[in-house]
Length: 519
Image (cartoon, rainbow, N blue to C red; front, side, top):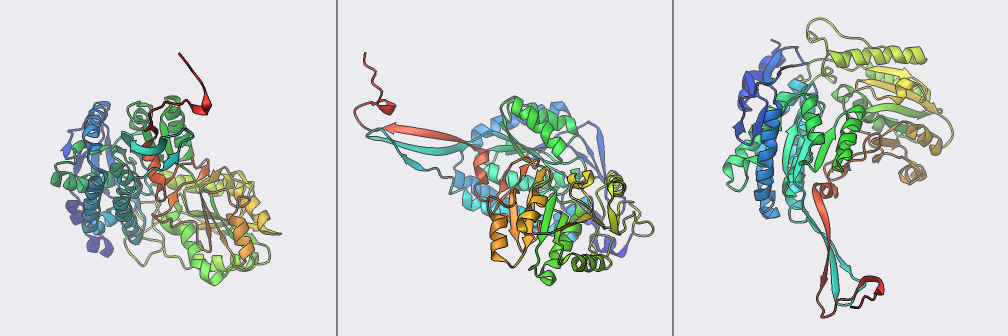
């Protein structure tokens, strides 16, 4: 065991989080099932070692969770919203207490840096804080009626069961973004975490269970866990008892979920692929933005949905930017993400490594010019086989591989000429529409970029990179990104059902639009 791993003491971390050698894959609050489904072994991409095992949930456990959730919803929706907020506040406090071990587990199971792991847990804490305040602001509006002595208003009611399907790259935060808002809205939640990071799911259930145990008005069924493969996700998508399914993952997965949920006229909240670009205009302050560009491309080893995939650079500064980036990449340290001196950790697994290698070869076949060579690292410290070299390639935006999102640290450089409209046209010319940014000191350029003729993405930034979304803003994108919005702003509304009410306080009952109907 390396010095870093000894200092981390992963076994102590697992003990703190209630992780056993073999874990159940299904829970209704504090009640854990004796699951006997397919065994899921979670190996760390950090060192290739087995973390723990989960016996996945079966259809029987899924059905039990649904039945309990239905029962819990009847109770939970009657709890006043500010009181539901208090429950979420306590969850946030438990997360504060467990921030360090949970952050280390995220880093060890998924492979992102320890600082990013801590940052992900902080996002969970932040959304809890946001939700607590929101629990007193679930407001509709009062409207003026066209009929005399009438009043109209709209209001929001609890929706029911919310199914959450999350991805490996943010194995805990995405669940919290959904559940914190769903809980204060009066909903109950069933979570299917990624089978590539199941231990994080078990840990989060254990943390929330402490809160459930301490509050008599928080029924077990508000928080359920079902760990399994695609069959669980398909069952959730097809289940009429689940009015809202929030799914994060690939565009292919999202299309499948969206079709099934749509066929039963349910609601889906989809957070899918990103193919994010940064435009570097001639006036850009390169010294200021360089760290953001590099982090955007290699942070989380390029496995963020908001990772920077494309740099669209004006021809007047292209060669300078290229040289600076190549030099910066030569300084990157690749290794154990729990060692804070390293910049880049591993990919999630060997399947991801193979996709990375395939993308490089496909790019070369289309005409990519490799500026910083890739490859898989071997030897001491790289035993997992998941450590790869970040790549920089010169490409054309129309290359098929550039149109496709590769979840790996491959950065594409694209040259543009003319004005910002020409750069925006390149940026928008991909199927995805999640995050975007422009680096410029020209006010007209930034305003055009943010206007209705500018970026077509759900997130558009100026002088800040594509990654690093804040809790206060709604998170999500357009086109093949799915159109969903999570986290801040008014994203809470999707977790509730909307109702318009008209009250007649007069002694007559006039019909709308002046219609006369006499008997």
